[in-house]
Length: 161
Image (cartoon, rainbow, N blue to C red; front, top):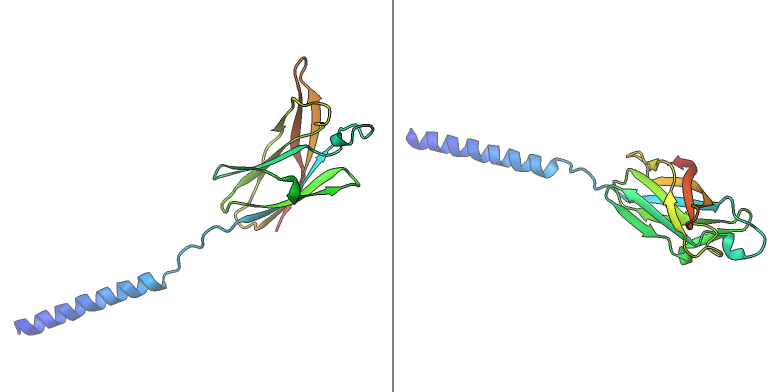
């Protein structure tokens, strides 16, 4: 009788362990956040289109996203010039889980070597379901008297898919 109780208890514990193991194996784990593709365009809106052609395109473009805090300078080799409006287009991958993105750039760098690019306006919010963001930023250059020229960029349009 004692042996029968021990066998029943051992079977009950074994069944419970087997059920727990089966639940652990079959429970779906959340998928890791996949990277987000950013198709971006940066347009220098108030450059002087006569004279030095170095002013026609941004001489520096950087993309920042968060979280996690991430910033990358977009290399010239990955940007495509759009001669119709003197803008750069690029495609980069942002870290999975990014919830916002912004751009800074330097325009009219051909004449003003001491510029600073900065973001003017709120970052673009990224919904959690988005896998691709198509965005255009417009940038304006202005002088901070008596200091250097600075370029501020703000989002002009964007869409998700």
